Image (cartoon, rainbow, N blue to C red; front, top):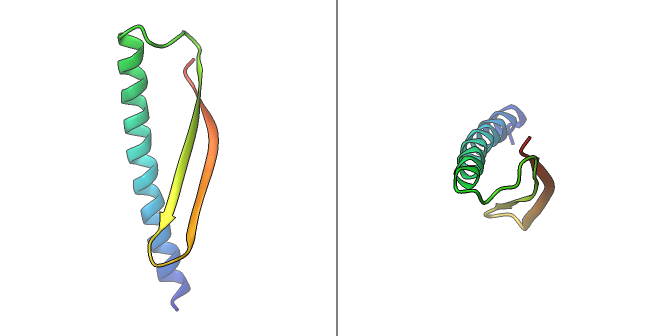
Length: 68
């Protein structure tokens, strides 16, 4: 196995995840705020779930998205 290729591939995937997730979360928060569905300064619970096909790997990362 080529460790450098694996590392590069994982980093590329995680960058795509991060950019896409940030864009989607920010849009949803803005839309909810505009619709009056969000309390000012709310902290929103968040969970990211990862599954890797071909491996018996599934895990979650929990946290919060603070809105102000």
